[in-house]
Image (cartoon, rainbow, N blue to C red; front, side, top):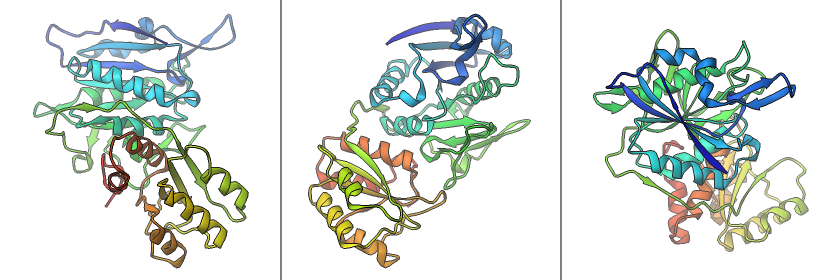
Amino acid sequence: MNVVKVDIETAAPLHPEASILIIYTGGTVGMVFDEKEKHLVPFNFSQILDHVPELRQFNYLVTVLNIEPAIDSSNVSVQDWLMLARLIEDNYAKYDGFVVLHGTDTMAYSASAMSYLLENLQKPVIFTGAQVPIGRIRTDARENLITALQIAATKRNGQSVVPEVCIYFRNLLLRGNRSTKVESSHFDAFKSDNYPPLAETGIDIEYSYENILPPSQLPFKVHHVLNDNVAILKLFPGITPAVVRSILQAPDLKGLVLETFGSGNAPTMPWFLELLKEAVSREVLVLNVSQCDEGRVDQGRYETSKYLLNMGVIGGADITTEAAISKLMFVLGQSISHQERIGLLQQNLRGEITI
């Protein structure tokens, strides 16, 4: 994998308003139609001003790091997340903000993972992308990119307005680890059911300052380890012992996101509880997450979740599945005790849960 640097010549003066680093990982946002090959191909970012001439009006210094070959978001891996974190770490002191261009399918997973890897942020890291390639006439790519750049550059009293990992898409700025993709054919692809938007865009960008994390006063820190020995088990009526056993007894399993019903309820059949109890006794971290879009786990509220609470399953509160699985990877990557890991999973580390 190569990283190609491209400097964009905007109208930046000698003293620009902001310096922004764009990291293009892949995805629809950076595709154009090749008339010869008759299919979509990544375009050359040195020609971005031809596709987004509005950038010439910015008083920003803009640099693009182009990942080659481009990564289809369905192929995004833990190693790609760690690579992104390193790129931001290496360039953190040089830029005022960062825009990550990413495929939409797994953007919420990547934004969640980055929120944990980048600790004590004081600058924006804005993920965005598009449903329609930038080379098409009716594309959402231009507006998403332009606004993401503006948000990444905006300061208030000398500090970045949004010092956290976010997703900007179709008029909404959402906390990255609160976001979920909900549309594959409309422009409003993402929503955040359990946390309000950080900003909404119309004629102006209207920030909801009360919803934005304050900039950290501690030194910026990047983590470099994630443990991917994790799985997701989504419960459904009629689930069989063989299916549950195949996941809970998978070799080297260290963490499990258990997608339960309603407010954290699960079957009470003896075979299910026994398999779960055995996994917990092996110090597999089991994080209980609601299948409901606007759900919140409240273990013990009903008898069907009291058993989980008593055996040591960890309640995930109102966390999304995307944020839960990456949080497990992050916590398991820490060189701490099992009990300390349980404590971290119960904490609100980056605004991912409401306690």
